[in-house]
Image 1 (spheres, helix red, strand yellow):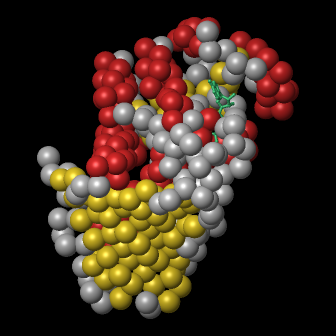
Image 2: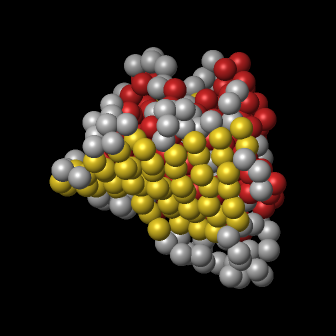
Length: 333
Ligand code: NAD
């Protein structure tokens, strides 16, 4: 059986990545849509053969509770809307996948986790790279100390943002600038290479080259983590220009991915030679992986759930706090 997924929000990621990926998934299928735009509803119903009964808008969305075709609700909305729709989906009795960043504030993440727990439903975050072979190999190389202990990591993710009116540049909807958008990948990269949680953070905002476009959010920023095993990291995120790199220097060699975080194909090498791995569709691998566990009645691995989303959200806020205060923030519990 394939689980029925309903996509909430038919913007760029849903239209260009998730819906096409759902045409090749084995454990799930595109069964429904939630949109506020009637013309998109018509277009998607035709293109993907979606029955009218499986089409919702943001007001009548809660009626999805009565729809047996929909097993999983996938929230692909602007960041500030994630919490509301995840909680409503859980209350409607559906498993939920929520895009990254899980939410803007840790207390929203906790409310999302609590709502899913209360409904006895699982909550996955859109951490597609955790199902991606090059990324899994990098996790192994770092966590199993294949080149000895990791000494330092450089991780960076950025791109040149376009439209100055988009929600990504509004703090109320995005929660911040590139850190909330792609910076989370650079944060995750340091955590999955070490397999550890950072114990301190320092951070800096770069000067703005376009203070009008970036009046509400940062344009570029940097941060440094210290890890309990002795590794340190330096990371960059930016909306000014592109970068996508994860590099780890270890006692007996090094390894890197570049590109490291985009939709692929990712590319990797080590001090011993190239990393060879199968190239997969990230979105299909992610949704199939999550749905396999749901179908098997298994608990999702912790590192793809709301618990991981909460950890990342706490770190994103700590990075902002460090940059705003200029102080080193202690992250030890
Ligand atoms: P987008 O702007 O293209 O789409 C957002 C959708 O939300 C649009 O269909 C829009 O109509 C709808 N929407 C509903 N209410 C809205 C409102 N009040 N204001 C603005 N839009 C509203 O954005 P996107 O690139 O598809 O990103 C959506 C989410 O997916 C974000 O959380 C983003 O971080 C995440 N994302 C994840 C990946 C990934 O690789 N995992 C990639 C891209 C985006």
